[in-house]
Amino acid sequence: MKCLLVVAHGSRRAESNQEIIRLTEKVAALSADQFDCVECAFLELAEPLIPDAIQSLAGRGATSVLVVPYFLARGAHVASDIPEQVAIAQAAVPALEITVSDYFGAAAEVPEMIFQIASSAQGVESK
Image 1 (tube, rainbow, N blue to C red):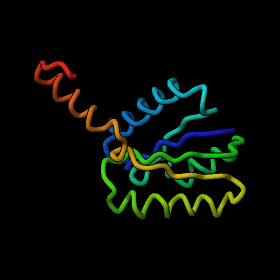
Image 2 (image 1 turned 90 degrees about the vertical axis):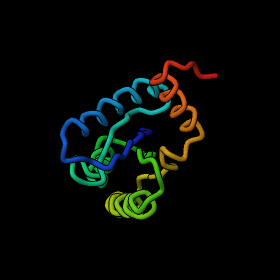
Image 3 (image 1 turned 180 degrees about the vertical axis):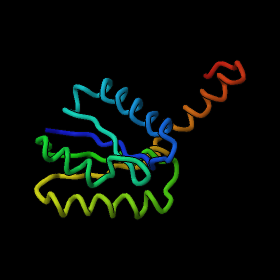
Image 4 (image 1 turned 90 degrees about the horizontal axis):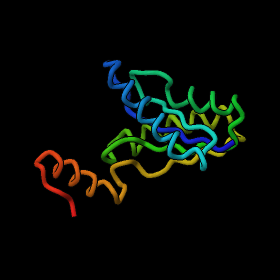
């Protein structure tokens, strides 16, 4: 079973965590033909935490998990903290194939998305 795990920071503000859950549901709808399951996890301040989510996926039959960090920049969380948490999960479920993709902010589409948002805010159409 092939799974996608969207990883966000987590917040003390429940509404922010709910945004991530809703985003994940939309990603699941878009990617149903590529992933058997799409879930979210958090680095801190909200549940499930990354190792718990990965172990849960493994318990449900996941054979591979693609972790996508939903972060804008390659700060300490992306460079160190997320890989450390994934390593904890990998040690607990060594047979599970876990891959960490590049972070959201590194996607080639991000500049265009920022431009589209800015254009919409100013009533300007994008090219």
